[in-house]
Length: 151
Image (cartoon, rainbow, N blue to C red):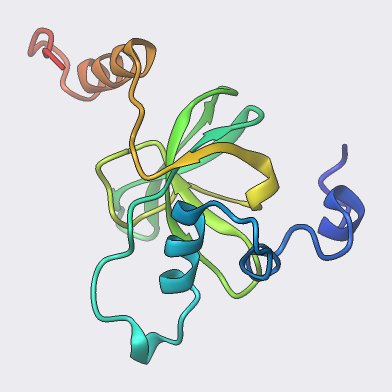
C-alpha cells in the first residue's frame, strides 16, 4: 500500500491512534501501562516509562543518529527486517509510537509507526539467538578489528 494513504484508509476509522487503543477495554496490560504513562501530560511524568517491546510486522526503514557533523547531524539509514524485536520508547500526540532495535535503550527512536504495524507486545525483550547474532554483527561493524563479542 502506498505511503500516501491516510491511517484511516490503512487501518480503519478509530483503529490506529494510540489513544484509540487506550479506549479499548481488552487492551493488553503491558501496552496499557506504557500508553497511560507515555500519553499523560508532561507534568504528570515523574519517572521512566514502563518497558514495552514488540515485533515488526513488515520490513521497516530506520535512521540512526551517529553524531553531530560540521553542518548537520550524521545519520545512518538501514532496513529492519520483518520479525525484528523492537522497543517502543515514545507515544506521540499524533498517534504513532517511536521504536528502536536497541532493546536496552529507554529513549531515542529510529522510526515512527502505528501500533497496528506491530505485534507480540510484551514487557520482556524476548531476545532470540537470531537477534543476538544481529547485535554481535552490528557491534563488529561499529568496532572493526576488535574481534568478536560474546552476547
